Image 1 (cartoon, rainbow, N blue to C red):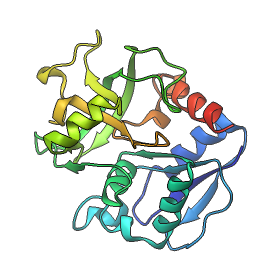
Image 2 (tube, rainbow, N blue to C red):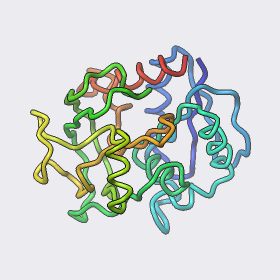
Image 3 (cartoon, rainbow, N blue to C red):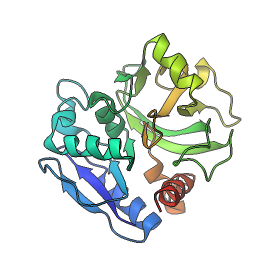
Image 4 (spheres, rainbow, N blue to C red):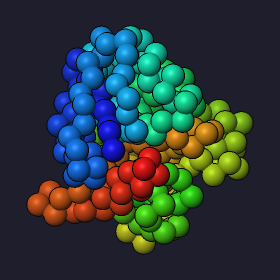
Length: 229
């Protein structure tokens, strides 16, 4: 099982991504610099979180134009499993691999804490080790995690089962009070139409070790490794 982590200037979660993928696959992933134009043969690609290019212009906007993203887009089209977390989610939307955009948090403040998430769809290569309605606990750390899309896009995402994660409370209640950043319909993670690209703001890679506070993220990595096998 081969995996790769894309590294941009300003990214700071690449080591967490490497650790999670190595634990899940048994093999250390290849780190690919953003200036490269080709990717090695790989089953899983992860675009990690951080602050690529210092979030200059818009979060992820400059990274989306990096040479390596053309290769990532080609692999996405070929069906390779791709996970974008936090800034990685922002980069995937800016690159057009996922719909919508990530805007400034409604509070206009950086949010760094653990949050509850409801698993809305387990029929994906990222969530098949969960049960529908499961509530998980992942950390978040973002300033621009407010998911926005037009009503037509939102309805399509809902109708096609492409909303994978929503912000909720410990009991799975989804309402405005449990929406920590203002995201439309409490959306925390979505997949593309083909189902092989997931973008999400919370950090499953930081929820794999009990010493870090919990292991709810392990099943996400188990799911994507199993699907990519």
